[in-house]
Image (cartoon, rainbow, N blue to C red; front, top):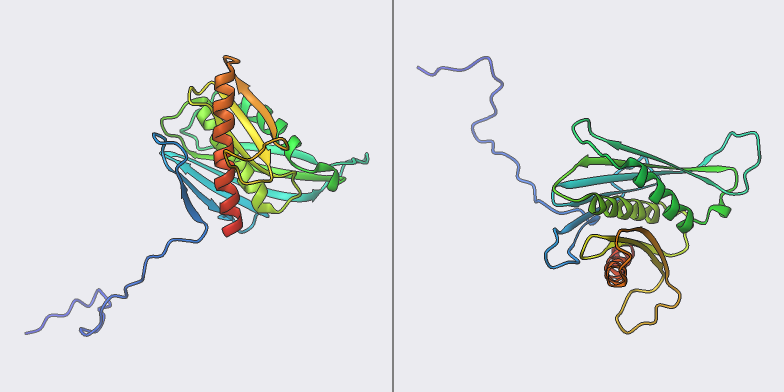
Length: 229
């Protein structure tokens, strides 16, 4: 005697499960710029509602950034250039104790990077979300936040000076944002390069050069990523 489980909708006995090919997104890229560093996973345009966005992961640390711009400014006074507004969020179980440094350094670097005069009486709203925090120092987290923001700005198509990247020294004492249009090569002249020191503890020139080299290397990878996607 055959028994039938009438509580379930059973498929025909000749049916089989569908199998789908797993394919990585074209916007997912892995970058490793340091021998002992965690690979840097990057995804561009993960948020379709934003004009530009990025998703960046290094180890267990995950940063998401989205850009909404240009938005009209409803202030009564005329503003000859856009105003950058930054909002930093983190999940409830993540405690970030240096938010003031995040806001101040982001504001400094973005005001230097974006061609604000191209967007009068406008706002450029940038949202940074720290989704997960791994075992990294404050300055390492700051560098990841800056690079997630840099990539989201590039993805948005907003007018900027040139390709940006944020580098950190091997000692972790110096943070530099680097802007240049050329792909970095050891033999190329870097006279047109703009360097913005965002954080420095020791003031050591070796730390500064180490951070610059890291920023140049990352900038080359970012440029290739944005060109190929």
